[in-house]
Image (tube, rainbow, N blue to C red; front, side):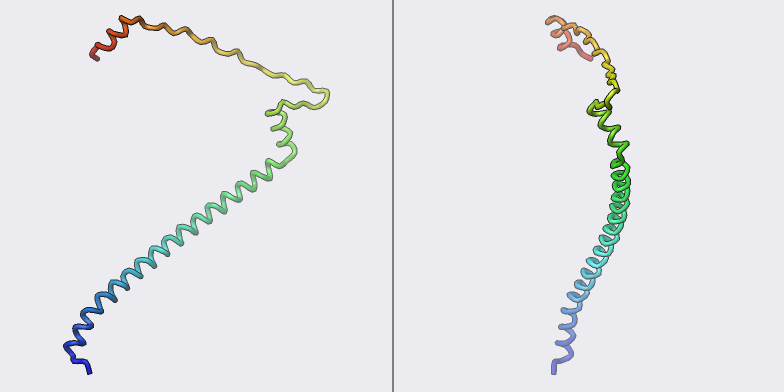
Length: 112
């Protein structure tokens, strides 16, 4: 039989390891539960985004929308129609005045 003193020392040595293991396992469990909840929220958000994209896809697949985009981007016209394109005049660049070398030297040594 193990003497009481030896059994007491064994318990004193083993119990802290058991407590540390229990605390570590509990902490890991809480982290996993928190991560699981976050992932569930992300899944709900992605499902909502997916639904929105499906609605947009069904809208874009309509023939009227396709025709509008083709007319707008590719300048297509139906037979008998005329295409009018407005071209805006390009802005005239204003001439920039190059400072003289003396002005550059003065600005270099200027204290502001």
